[in-house]
Length: 164
Image (spheres, rainbow, N blue to C red):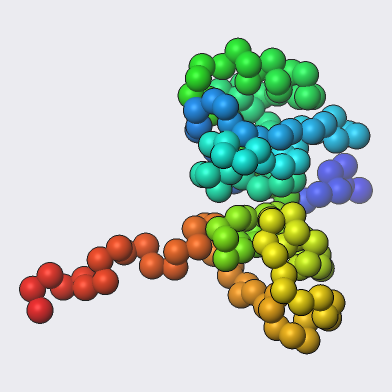
C-alpha cells in the first residue's frame, strides 16, 4: 500500500500568496478562527487596505514582514512591531471569489452565497427585495480574472495609435 494517500502533495501550503504592502493604520479588522487561523473579518472605512482592494474577507494572514505568524496575539504583536510601512502575506481559499460592486467595494464570497447579504456587507443599497432575482437589480457579471480591478481597460489611452 502507498503510505502517502495523496499522490500529488503540495509542499507549499500557499502557492499563490497575496502580498499587501501598506502604511499604518492598515484598516484591516482581523479575527482568530476556532482553529487558530487569523483571517480578515472586515475593513475600517478609510483604511489603507480597503483603498488598495488587494485582500478580501476570509483571507488568512500567514506572515508579517516575511515572518510566519500563528494566532491572533502573535499576528498583532508582529504588526505592532513592524515599521510604519508593513508587508503582510495572506492566502486565499481557492473556492473564494471576489464580488465587485458598482461602488467599487469588493467583498469575498463563495459559490452559492446570496447576493443580497453580500450587497449589504458592501454597503451597496438594493432598490427592490424580490429575493429571487426576478427584477434583475442584483444581476452581476461573473469574471474569471483574478485581478479585482473593476476597470476592464488597463490602457488609459483610448487611441493606441498616436499618429492616425
